[in-house]
Structure formats: structure tokens, C-alpha cells
Image 1 (tube, rainbow, N blue to C red):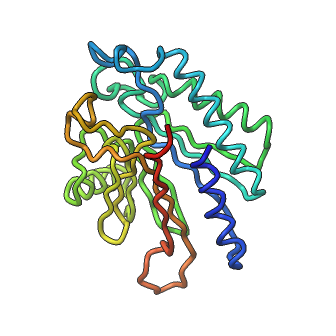
Image 2 (cartoon, rainbow, N blue to C red):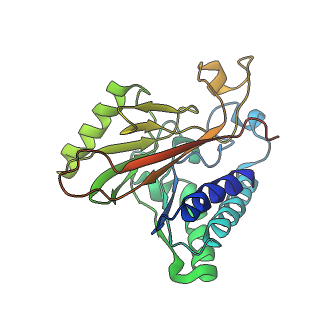
Length: 246
């Protein structure tokens, strides 16, 4: 709830400053749930079973979308899958987007949101593992990022692999998976944070692996540049910190 409130306040701040906010993009980068069968002891670390997690996640996403939709600004939701959104090791090697447990969740959120808000909200739910988007003529890659090092070199390598696959120039990449925010090259390459995790004793996976593990989410604001302007479309950002929420 607090994340949505802060996000809407940030949007309204720019509206009141005189910016014409054309579109809001809500990007879900996967790991919406932790399958209780993911690892041999995953069930012990989960507050609830997989089915209940899916129900809760669906309701929370619908609530967040509703809060954003109330601004009256068109909303574009991009929802990619993560490795913890299914029962097996790593990512499913065939059509991970449609084979993971995130597929029915995301599509339920889509159906409910479209029924409530109609054309004011639209969705991209890739059947594969990533989504290529476009912001003011700039290609942006969204991918969960499991197996990708959270370093500038690691992100550059994956971005360039996808660019070669797709035959386009990709200027920006956003990924999740690592539970902490990392920002490189004037925010062209970004790892987003997580909504949970303040363990400081190595009691669960991300803490055991040594991730920073500080709950937070990052917001970016873009403007269209004139032809020949060398700057990126980015002009403002906000890190919404969430560690104080129990």
C-alpha cells in the first residue's frame, strides 16, 4: 500500500510541476511468489503455500494497478516471469513466461484490470523470458536476470546478447533477481530491488548469498528529447525504500 502511495505522489509531483504525463509503465520483473517446491526446503521458508501466495499476489497487483489507474493517466503493465515463479531449478527451458506459475497470475490480473478500467490499462505478458519495449524511440530490455551478474560487464553482456538475437540496438536494460539496486552508466543498466528481506544473519537464501537485501523499488521518469540531443530520455528517479514496512 505504501509503495503505491509514494509512487502516485511522485507522479502527481510532476503533474503539478506542469509536466504532461502521457503514460505510466508498471514493470514486474518476476519472482512474484516463492514456489514452496522450488528448493528442498523452500516450504519451510515460506509464510504460506504456493496456491495462497498466488491468490495474495494477484490481489495485491490488482490493488496496485487500481491505485495507479485512479490518476487518470494511461497505464502500460509489463509482466515478465522469474525463476522462483515455478517449481524447477533455474528457468524453464521452454516458453518460461507461459509455463511458470506467474502465467495464470498475470493473466488473471490482466482480465480483472481490463474489466475494471478498459482501455485505460494495457498489458504485455511475454510467453518467453524477456520483453523488449520502446520509450521515445529508445529500446529497453526487461528481463528477470537469473544467471546474469549484477555488474556493468554482466548486464552489458546480456544486453548485447539480446540485441544480437533481436537485431536491434538496445540502449537500456532493467532486471531483477538480485534483491538489491545497482545502477550503471547513467542508469542505462539497472538492477531493481525487492519488496522484502532484511535478514542479517544468513537465515534465508539472498542473505546467505551475501546480497545487500535491502527492500526497495526504483522509479524512473522520462522525457522526449529533440533529434540530435545526446542525452538519454531519463530526467528523474526515485528509490522507494520499504525496509520499515512489516
